[in-house]
Length: 29
Image (cartoon, rainbow, N blue to C red; front, side, top):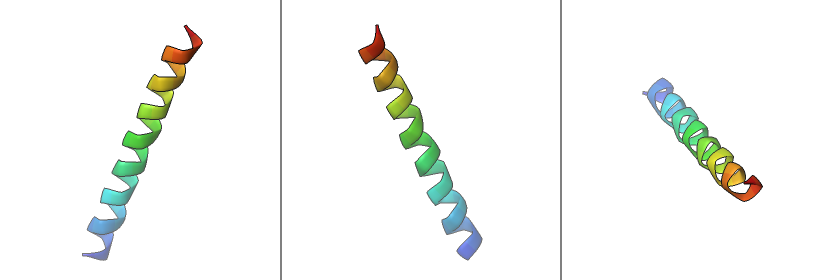
């Protein structure tokens, strides 16, 4: 169970970082 929570947290972080990259790309245009 602990492993599932850890991997879900990693997925959330990757998703959040992906959003930051998209926002950064929009600002850089």
